[in-house]
Length: 328
Ligand code: UT7
Image 1 (tube, rainbow, N blue to C red):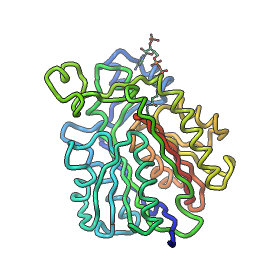
Image 2: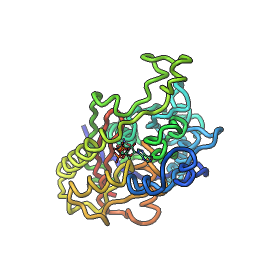
Image 3: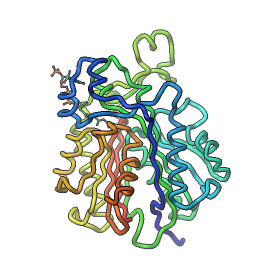
Image 4: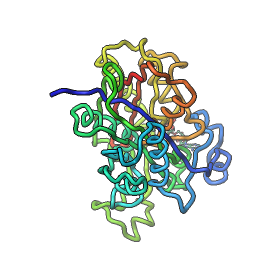
């Protein structure tokens, strides 16, 4: 079987115009700009209005990515939307985005892998492109997390923000594109980050609503060490698998969970601060959208150029984690 490398040929991102600053949060819960800034690095996050929802931002990001790739919606064979905050339980947000895009030749589907969802998506379509099953794929990370956040819980409401990022993947020249990629999970961490209510295990009742079971609950400090260890280990493994050393990496774009997690991953890997991208101050933690938003910002600003070797790594609820090494 002949195989082809898959690479990113276009990107786009979008987020709501609404902004929630640390000062705004000081008026809602017992917190302070000082605590949020020193413990997380976040200064503000984007927040969708009541009439805004996930597929709108996913569609906008995907439209920009398809245009940036020089393609038309009809050229797309598959749309994979990574989201933990779908428009609704059914149909999938990927199918809704397919319709909104007018991607009449594509299959639309969702991936549920929390903050690692974008890397799950590109790992899956990479093999589909490499084996010739599809040619042009769109992978989206899209979230409206602020509608699942409990604004009486200061341990979660200060962290999460909304937005979407999208990448078009297609065959690229040998030596370019995705050189190594791997995803993992460990469901034993279920209760470290979850929304227990509203599924088949704990269906929606008046009581689940009163208990606020439909909102995210997080044991952040339980996840912290696992996140650092998992991202550092899988990143080192993928750099080696790609045939490189840590020093060869031009830029690391980690999931934007917490500035202290990013710093700890970089120090464990032995990557200097200037080679690690962060936009958490402006966006907060946008889960599956954080890596594609960050990567698109890096491409737009010239921080990522053709020929650069880039490491993406993520960790999220599940627990899930992954790493991808790409030559642009
Ligand atoms: O997106 C991927 C999945 N998620 C993660 O990877 C999250 C990883 N975890 C984290 O980012 C951090 O654990 C948090 C930012 C969530 C929390 O930071 P922390 O340094 O682990 O704080 P903590 O939970 O250990 O809480 C320390 C103190 C507590 O007070 P006491 O018990 O020491 O008196 C909390 O009640 O900070 C308090 N606290 C706050 N204080 C002011 C918790 N949230 C806040 C807040 N403002 N917003």
